[in-house]
Length: 162
Image (cartoon, rainbow, N blue to C red; front, side):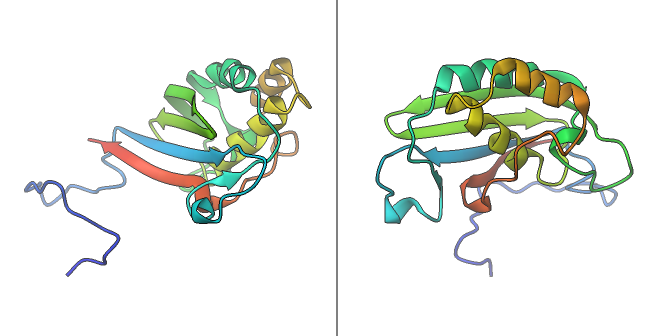
């Protein structure tokens, strides 16, 4: 019996050597932000509340620089091995009303990578940092340069490709 918050959509037989983590080709994470002046208590478990209006276009332009193969050491720590190099296949910022969704698809993610990327994008959306700052942080691979990891409530693994 599965917990109530898990549902099976499809089931396939795999080889005995299959490993759901290490055989994945890519993963997609979504981070949700509630960008409203007054927080919505019903969204607290599912989205980070940011009361100041964010410049979505500035965030989108900065995030575009993550596409490709980079050393993402500024944004996280490796979960296995020592390499912090990852390939980002897709990165986008979508806004609909007061909701902002940041979606990232890569061959792998570092520990807290998505949350630290979002924590670095929010000051850009507020006008406190620039697109050039984001590029410099990414290229530095220095975790002291990046923003803090935002709260985990907005983070959701949405897809794994094999």
